[in-house]
Image (tube, rainbow, N blue to C red):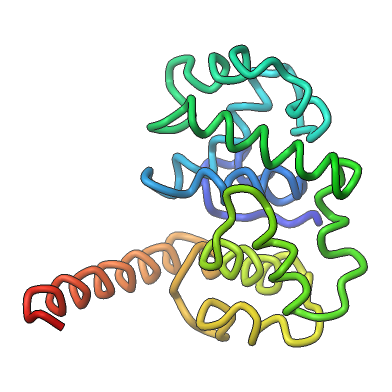
Length: 197
């Protein structure tokens, strides 16, 4: 993995996301209830506050929970809910240490099918079905991880030339298209709710 992602919209943070599988997993975990850029800048902020140039699952898993929460809570906070997100990040890292010896790439290194990779992603703490599908699409579309059937396993997020999620953001133009798609979806959901469907 050594590409430049464009999710944090900050060069240093995006560079870390492109070379660090753990940073990408943590950014995806943080991507809820805050703007996408804030979420995906989080791994870089955490690494900086830990005095490191990358994230290490063993180190984060072994961190004292209160100290790690304080690290995320320092101004500017890494997330709107830094305490609960600190706990989730540590749970994710503990899971990676227990099941993959702390190596996030082991999630996909030997995987045979997209369905198997999706199952592994859904097993991660903090990763529900939708988040797992989006991350699978990000792996396939931008990070070159393409086991057999990955597009199908990623569902609509795996579709080529779609603009549904972070998996499709490669710069300002695609970011605008993804934002427009999300606004359309929200408007449609609101209209459906208003009509009682």
